[in-house]
Image 1 (tube, rainbow, N blue to C red):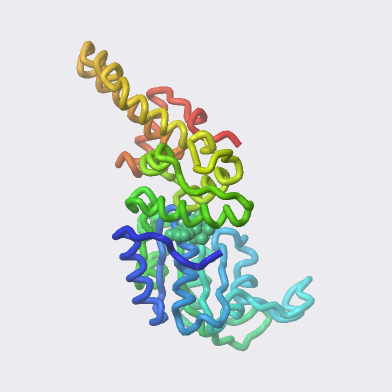
Image 2: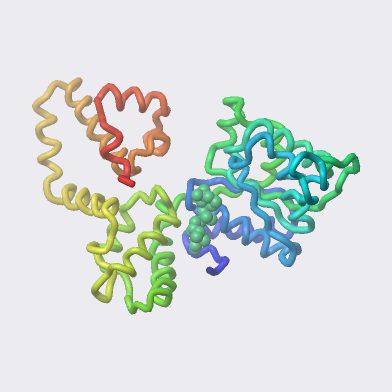
Length: 331
Ligand SMILES: Nc1ncnc2c1ncn2[C@@H]1O[C@H](COP(=O)(O)OP(=O)(O)OP(=O)(O)O)[C@@H](O)[C@H]1O
Ligand SMILES: [Mg+2]
């Protein structure tokens, strides 16, 4: 697939501007943003636009390495360094020598990982397991996270010194819902892509689908949009993508749009017959249910959108006896 960030919205233009400015310089970059917003893609583009483009681009899933294997994964080991080390192995840093190392999901890394990482970033060298000779490497670091690292720092789960080191320049990937009609451009791009892949001849999106795409909250961002388009290209029978080939979570939005248009007053009027206290409670419950439906029961996301603290939101969910499972997608 192409290594290209599609979009013309002011927010994505700003991201592209920043990328093209920092990429050639070799500075450390922290890319933050919700899941599926293109953090991995942005990291690749930074590598492509840098003088290191012909050297390796290596990704480490920082949260996925058990503490006992961190040193060996990052720095490698010499032959015979420990039982089972039958050959010399390169670690991620050595693999990425002269190239770019993407520290992916850095917000999920353990304290032990953070400590090992900080050490190599400060010293610009490390010792492989089983060796006393330091190895020097030249690696450009790009880190990505969908967690708020500042929050991690204040909660004590993320080292502040490491945060400052990684966060020389921060690039914030905007959520798809904030990118005007970029979702149309991306949808059309992938419509052509999947047309070719599945030998179909769809020509575009129906009016209704465009409306749904603009209203939908896209909790999974661009990744979700690509999956929706792929599915639609496969199942659609007509020459346009119609609502019939959209997955259920998008059709619920459609239902909400219809309801809002047709009988919004019916929902609001009975509220006026109640004392303010009861009406407020009823409104709050409906608001929370609507919100949770939008984000498929993802409490963190609902907390973010509503401006409530997560814990507070949980309390309210309990108080109103809202069943979260009904909003979560069935596997
Ligand atoms: N603006 C864009 N134009 C075209 N494709 C995009 C765009 N943004 C993201 N994509 C594609 O969407 C998919 C998800 O992007 P990516 O994996 O970079 O997201 P991410 O932010 O790293 O997500 P996660 O936090 O889940 O790791 C990838 O296939 C990527 O190529
Ligand atoms: Mg990613």
